[in-house]
Image (cartoon, rainbow, N blue to C red; front, top):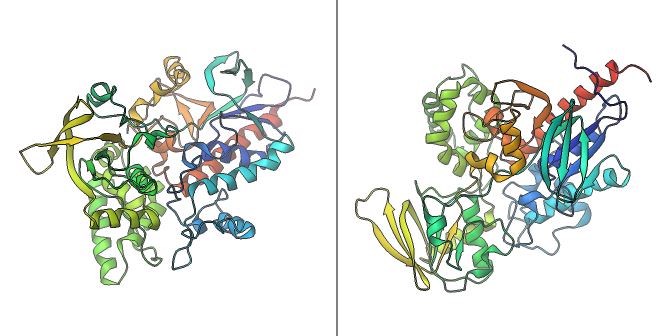
Length: 478
């Protein structure tokens, strides 16, 4: 069934909310696509440059990309573009730690943001993409179009909206947020600028969480000269893994007779790791194959099995799939060897402020007896609060209340179709409202790693371009 022409007689307007890699990628690929009629592409992003977003808008020298530069690109079919961009500009000349012994590059994270911004620059200059440096405050459906309001007082009418906002910030577990809010060294959100400035060199620090963000925090503290003891506590005590010392070939095939059970998939992965080890291939090659086949594997799982996987297996997947940069791994290894970093499996049962200190009751996972510890600082790095996405920004909650958005049943983001069209509470999809990036993870599976994010941005741009072509075909001449 063909879509009706857009109700306006002028050029169609595509509004992209969020100008990080997801939103900038959609804008970039849409501006270069065959749309039938050149659309107005407007990106709402408060930051000065498109393409940085939360991940790549950092000046912290300890923050590095977690994937070798040779595998990072805004172009899904040109994976070497970022590394070529670096080499053409000698962009890591002032960063001797960027190059590893095997020749791979793990530059500072901000550099990738500069690369994406450089690709968007000519599109901004010639008007194919417009950057509205403002935060969206309201999105409403009126007379077949979208009305978008921003905090600068602007009102934009759009025919298609792509939501490409970041996932929610971490949420402190239990009552910690309220009990510790008054302490000057309780850091509830490390994504805020200068969040770690309150930590003193010799502070005893409790880090709640033990994934990529925790690794970044510990590396950042070390870069600042922090030498106090650090305890990193998480439910399972799993530390993010590093990259293989040498590239590993993909191993295994999980699509042949694809399983419909999370447990059976886990058994097959474990068997493949054993078989790979017998051939001298590390687990990295197996997990990389699972990632490569991830979309089809995810689609084969019923929703109930997806939820089981998220509930029980996601922590194990995350620490093996999202690997830390070698430079960060070296910092963690050195801290553990020196006895300054303790990795603890358990939870924070309680905490309270006692004068200058924070008294924490820690419950180790495999012990009945709790531990009572005193810290100078507590830092929350528990990862995105996926379930709170509709509460993070009022306009998202309003879209849900008005029947346009709903949470994905896996709890990983917003519900959408295989075409990335948003699904409302009624179960109906809206072809003019699309989800780009990690918030579409519940439908598409793995959408947190950079390669998958850029692939999805290209996919969403292609979907929008197809809608615009149909509109151009069906629009009668003036």
